[in-house]
Amino acid sequence: MGLRRLSGYVLHIASALALVLILALVQAPAPARAGTLVIESWRVDDKALWERVLIPAFRRTHPDIEVTFAPTAPTDYDASLAARLAAGGGGDLVACRPFDVSLSLYRKGYLEKLDGTPGMQNFAPGAMVAWQTDDGKDTFCMPVASVIHGFLYNKAIFRRLDLQPPRTVDDFFAVLELLKKAGVTPLALGTAERWEASQIVYTNIGPNFWRGEEGRHALIAGRMKLTDAPFVEALRFEARLGGYLGKDAATRTYRDSQALFAAGRAAIYPTGSWDIARFGQGGQAPGLELGAFAPPVRRNGDACFISDHMDLGIGINRRAKNKEDAWRFLAWVGSQEFADLYTNRLTGFFTLSNHLIAVRDPLAKQMAGWRNDCASTIRFNAQVLNRGQPSMESELWDVNAQVVNGSLAPEQAAARLQAGFARWYKPQQR
Image 1 (cartoon, rainbow, N blue to C red):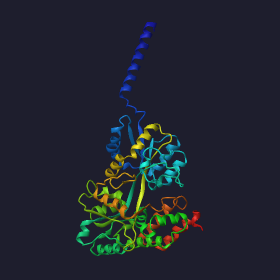
Image 2 (cartoon, rainbow, N blue to C red):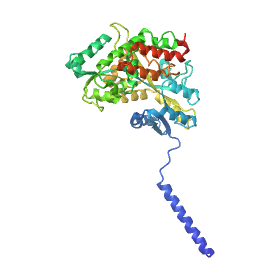
Image 3 (tube, helix red, strand yellow):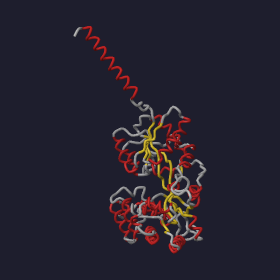
Image 4 (cartoon, rainbow, N blue to C red):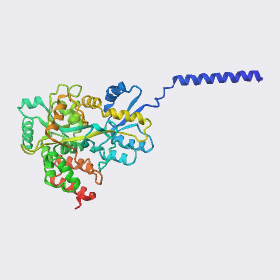
């Protein structure tokens, strides 16, 4: 091959390679903007809210900051987030579980300390407990929202049978008895998944027996035991429910209970404010006329307590790639605008900020109003009490399901809970 011919051949090959490269660059997807702010969360169901409402609202005043909401399935979130943070990755902002899960991330150096930073001034000290160190000196996530436990009921069924929402324990069981005699399944409740009996029954009605924060703090301090009368009485309340669940309650799932209530085949649904949006307009039962009542007190005139559980916070990844933008976004999360949007677009999740928010959904407004009449508390085992083995959380799931099913007596259940607790918790060993 002559030199001139070889040069032409090389030029031809180079031109072809250049053309291939140009076509590849044109057809390749555009890379993500390097400065995009990434928010991690377990709340997959909230993706549309973030993408259609919250992020656009933020960008109206911060058009230079692009934001992506990147949720992970709830069951995978804790482990996968911890792994990403440990490897030096993870989103710029992360949704924080309450208490120990997020506290562990902070202790490992993965989350920024937030005390005194913009936006935090809009939260009372009590609103930050779920995202603080045990001594209360460091706050590592900004509080976002809480959920309130209670009971939803079918107003049409109550009206037909001339029933009133119960206020006391005696009233409650009288209503259940009348519903049962009328051929209506009184309670849309099952125990197949076990957590329902613990988190939407025991920690729902229990605070009226152990007086909310008074009993919770007494357990932590070792001044009360789970075998003391208030905790046993709450279990006895649960045991009485077993006769009002209808057929197949032991194999009824959470979704089954929702469907039973939505279809109008059960009169009362033990739940929390997070389920309001599941029914009514845009939900499973748009024609269902819903009412709500607070957990019944033991006797007329007793002080009332509600489980007003801190559910969600937001923290900043200490190794965030876009930390300056993350601080700006977090300051906005502490604003009136965010509190209003979150409370009114995610029905049943209530801001933990001091901002005065007009709750627009009537049922959510009613439940939020219980804060004015009753003292708020949290799920009693959420702070400190889940740190040993056997796990208080898993024990509560198993024991409460058995109590509702009638396979474990309340006194035996209390003894089992206390024995497991005292095995690892020193203040309970005195």
